[in-house]
Image 1 (cartoon, helix red, strand yellow):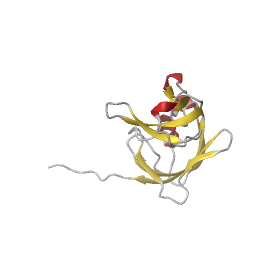
Image 2 (cartoon, rainbow, N blue to C red):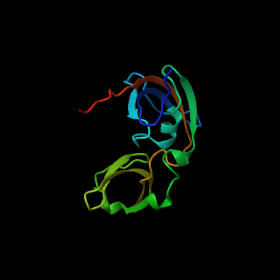
Image 3 (cartoon, rainbow, N blue to C red):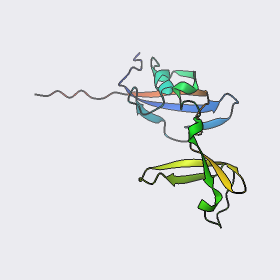
Image 4 (cartoon, helix red, strand yellow):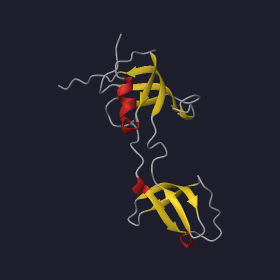
Length: 150
């Protein structure tokens, strides 16, 4: 039976959760995730986790934060004066906001704390610093046809 190796295109159903058991993502009710193993399309730990699986295999993988979204970076915490926000904007902790760095680069931040004159924003990935657990099921190894050149 064929096993997954780097360069294979695969289809995988998954259920991702934190150590607390909280689900953060899954493919239930959707098409399976399709990606090229080793192609940099998914986090390293997920990529490594499917290697060696055969179609129909199910397994659980534990991915330490350094093979997922990395550690939380304190430099990604931004203090923004409250006056920089529209007066009628109702901010809430946990609220996602889009920002621009002034050079056209857009990124998402989350409102972490609201003080009287300052809003604390967090630009870390929501899963940074978190160890992740994935239940995987390999649905298909998509074989690429060989092209013979004359």
